[in-house]
Image (tube, rainbow, N blue to C red; front, top):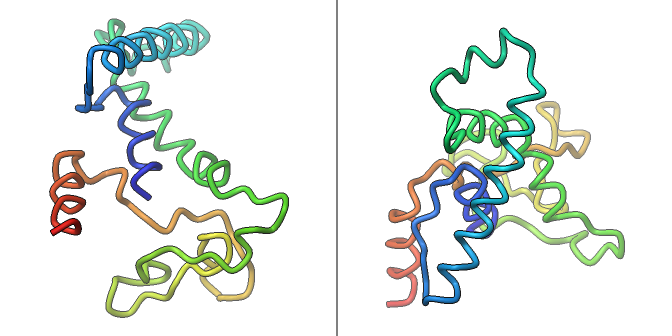
Length: 146
């Protein structure tokens, strides 16, 4: 889930991690590439859709956020794709399907939740970690190391 959330931060232009000089340079290159990609997406939108992003043409933060919201389940599927079936019995570390942590069930097949009737596997992302600010996720990680 942390990698998923980190990808979300990078795509949305919110990544706080800079690392060493080499890492920082790589992140800056990646962000420039993402800006190019989102500029192409923006230019391909019709006038009404472009108007939604009026004034957001330097970093495309709003478009990036909307793109992430629309595609996060596809990113989760890509991360948990499993052609060799190695993740068949893998489960997400928190009970988040169908309720809160106290009443929810475990995402136990390829880390995905069943549909509301509990019969079919879906591509529902069992986490909202990608909406938790990065620095708060870091605090949780550091606390686990204590």
